[in-house]
Image (cartoon, rainbow, N blue to C red; front, side):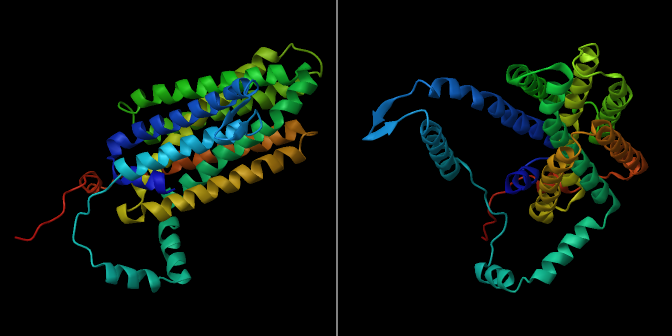
Length: 319
């Protein structure tokens, strides 16, 4: 949340979605490259400052080095110039007097807006759908197509590449189309993907690969929609939240997303033997999200002062 809140403060509504697509694209590249390092770690066996480095502690060593580099970059290159002279004593006193009830009032103030409620619901649905699909994918493909670890790993790798490419394309299409249009388009694609799964699954027989191409189309459409929804919901959420409430706003959205990533696997895991029932329920909640977006489509607004607020001004000097 702090990273996304800082990004919203340093960007304008016109450039925010592009920056989010870059950041999330870099994260996806990390998710793709990270597992590849296990191939190199298997052959590591040397001493470093008296420490025996093997395949078991090499990942920890690499992460320690990367975090140290990131800490140095943050200390020396990440800064923000204050716009006004601040009385630190008054700020400290206001923080000490900030109660839990006041925090809940701020949360209620943000969440009572219909647009914010819809964005939170659509964020929940997107991550719920993603984690449920990831949970079901391995046992379903093993039962239906006799797939094993290699085939599933290849599918996940190709899916990761597709997501990365969508983030790249998203950087350019956000210059021509508004975020709410991209969000609606993403939910339409997700609805089509779930509809395909609901229609085809009853005819699929375990052990046959007759409907494998259609299954791959379902997965491809689902993965195509995910980056569109993830980026635009985050960008629209920051645009609907006041400049001084970006931190708590992102905390609320991340909380909803984390709840979705917990409930999704639990829900899918409990319905592994009833896959069609699970897909039907997912299809209906995706339709609900699509309907809600259409209902409030014209309610999305931009703060006219947000572009000026994103600019970092130098410290005011009294002369």
